[in-house]
Length: 408
View 1 (cartoon, rainbow, N blue to C red):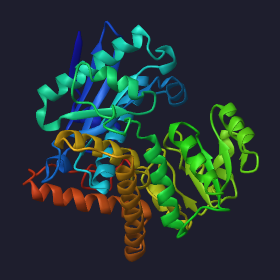
View 2 (tube, one colour; view 1 turned 60 degrees about the horizontal axis):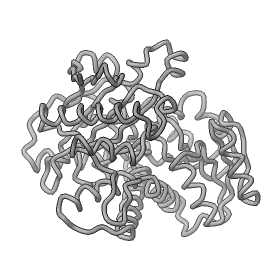
View 3 (cartoon, rainbow, N blue to C red; view 1 turned 30 degrees about the horizontal axis):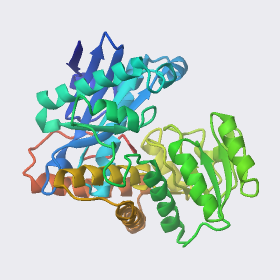
């Protein structure tokens, strides 16, 4: 039987300082489901023009390697991930001005042990869908709508859609529901805006992580004539790209990717990759990538700033996917058609505008770009609360302060 258990504010603050609207642990003995749903802040969703929901992807990850390295339990790490990522979605959606609040869900499981189309995976996704539906019924003010993320895909969303309507990324008209191409497009747009160029021809870019987004970003950059240095935890992915495009691609071990002498370093794998150890070794002036929660701690944004690095916050640069999925949700709700060209144009415009505005805020106020991105998002959160007579809430380092999470 699927069950929900509220996570107390004391437990949340033990892991991450901040205020969260609603966080629950979800379990189901029959399918083996153990996970979390976190809604950080739904102010944008309830403002004028908002859709009354909070959106964020469903991550499926075992956390076993991280547990062995940190000494924390997989459950603690999964909760921490859900909290960080849901906060990141708040800021990403606020910056993107997409009418959605910020949420996230996590399943503690190894995707490799639940092959696509297997009865075990279908059971797991059905159970998670039931949990999402129960969450919406129990906490309607904080309704969470899920989407694909690391370890999940469009087919998983279609399985979840069988038991709840609170799911996105299943497609609408020409959009097949996969946000990755638009995330990659947005990263490329942020690079061009930050560098002040019309094309990435002859620019050197180091990409760490060649998954759904990193791989697509690599292809876009190659199409524009960029020179790439790439790495992936699965070294064969990098070597395969090199074999296809030997004139454009060099490979290095994943542990060396941040050290490369390039124009742009693009972290596109897991988060917390910018820390005390990696930052001093980064040679690139620009850091613009798709990974969520790139800063290990907020202070690392200031560290990058003091070193003269141009770091476009991940929730600014990688918002293309959530913009696309948000448009899907909105157009379905309003019964409007949706074209890929329309999505692409909106992604391009919003990412470029927000990148430019973040740089202007940083330069005008002499603050790190990470803080400038937060300021941009918080301006819109504050306006949303005033717009909807949002009730006074205790704010620590959550939606109103210097947010702990710098990504989604």
